Image 1: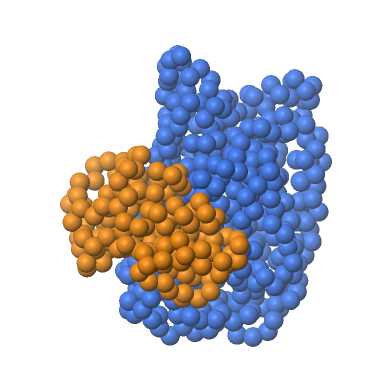
Image 2: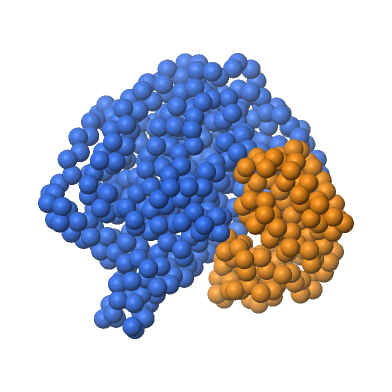
Length: 407
Length: 150
């Protein structure tokens, strides 16, 4: 059969970031995919070599606008690894609180987008509505809805005062029943089952070969999570579970993320209740020569930072590896053999972050029409509608309650 | 396998090919080997010890290019770094590990364009991040990089 090339990207108003995928298709079936990145490359590693160790924390916080605190958490641990500094207990708890609140809002953001891609715009709006109170709490606790600037090598920059704790707990108490309801709704929805199960399967073998991490690896039966495997911050001091599934399809990826929100709520609550009194900063005076590694389980998977120092004020080498860097190449394993209508969804299921990874492809169909991202999203939605008609369901019966009062 | 069992297994397998063995902490271990042995050790760590290639770092030094393969040993709670130094800055070459490990394809392409290291046997040595009009032979992560015109 004739092979055609469908380019997706690199620039389009619907895309939140520039990316370029080239899909090679035969009829409706994807036979190969070429991924091109680099459009968002900002030379962070090189810039880092010209900044003071303290300033680098702010630089790496700006690598990603969604999981903005993940890079600082990994980076400061790398510097602490070089300096051999033990972080005060209270600072460890605060790091875990900020890290988990971020996971809750990041997973909700993804879930809303996934709803948008399959044509469930109600889900999109509700998930983002539930996300708002989390951002409000961030503003209250850190002063910012994003880019919190809470981390510094040796501890945290700002304390969470006891008077802020009841408000965070109240938000969690309101959010938790909504999340249980959301999990129940997804697990019971026949359209979602028909639409997402068996789509874009990443096998366990492929997850290992591609070195996938986080909620891309765990739904494929790879039970890895830095928070459990190499505990840091306060993750070994609280009770929580890794969420692992076996199927590796888009449905499993959605389920893992939703269930992780519940685990994150558990972690934040315990951290707030058990947080010890004490200092929040170990006060690193200078960074000796040497090399250090820090990693953190970001919402999308392991963030990895390697820092080398020669005893001066700046790193002489700073390597950053974001989770999407190892997760995006799995498209080679998951998109091939699938229909064009599912590509938008499969790629979205990895929750790719291009700013982090640092580009994607465009496609033409058999008649030589150029398909853009909006066409792929439309194909994806049409398929959901077709499944709904086949199942005889008109609108999903979701009973979604209010959260966090009127805005 | 425990942490010590994994490290012992590697020591027995590679014996005097290990040029240095450094435990920065129980969770951070660095093993230095000659560039010609790096491929074998990476393959062994991935296939026999359950190592997951977190990433690799290339470092420019005055007398050569260092490559550090960072393996996440998730079952042991440790990051094992296989370190090697290609003793030249003129056309440095090393055997590609992407031939058996698809997870290394991108990072080797990145080190290739940023530091000018040739990965022999790599399936796809195109640029990854740099623009198409970037001049040939200019490597931005080299320490003597002074910027490009225009």
